[in-house]
Amino acid sequence: MTNVTSIANAEEALTRLKPLVGEWSVRAISPHGEPWPGQGRTVIEWHYSGAHLVQRSTVEMPEAPNTISIMGCDAANGTYFQLYSDDRGVCRVYQMSIGDGQWRLWRDGKPFSQRFTGRFEDGGATIVGRWEKAEDGEHYQTDFDLIYRKTQ
Image 1 (tube, rainbow, N blue to C red):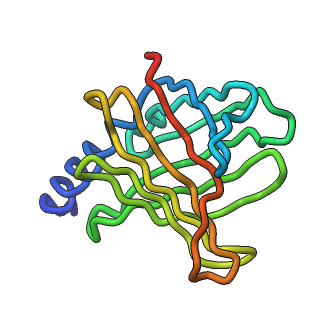
Image 2 (cartoon, rainbow, N blue to C red; image 1 turned 180 degrees about the vertical axis):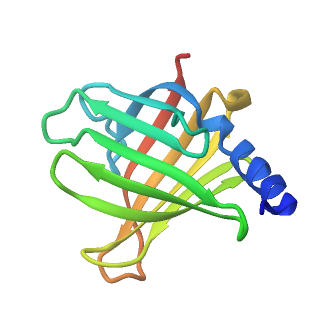
C-alpha cells in the first residue's frame, strides 16, 4: 500500500533538485586565484526512473578526473545523498542539501573530510562554489573553487 504523505514528500524533495538539471560549463580556480587550464563540462539529467539525477563531468585537464554521480533523496526523512565515482577509481558517498539558493555536499572520513558549498546566482544560470577539505577532519582549507555556467 502506498502512503500518500510519502508520495507528496517525494515529489517535493525531487522538485528541489530541478535547479541542477542542465548542461553546464565548469571553470576551476586554485586556492591562489589562478584559473586551472582547460574547461570542464557537466551534464545533470534525470535518470529514466525520474527518482534520481545522474551527473557526468568531463575535464580537459589530464590530472583532473572525469566523474559520474547519482543524486537522490530519502523523502521520508528529507535527506539527500550523492554517490560519487571517478576514473581514478575513487568512490565516495556525500550527504547533500539543496534549498534557499544553496547546494551543499559534505563527507567526513578518510583520507580527509570534504565539503562543497555552491550558491545559485543569475536566476539559477550560475553556481558559484567552493570545495574545501580538512586533513584532520576539523580545520578546513580551500581545495578549489568551481563556477558552473548553464549552457542549456
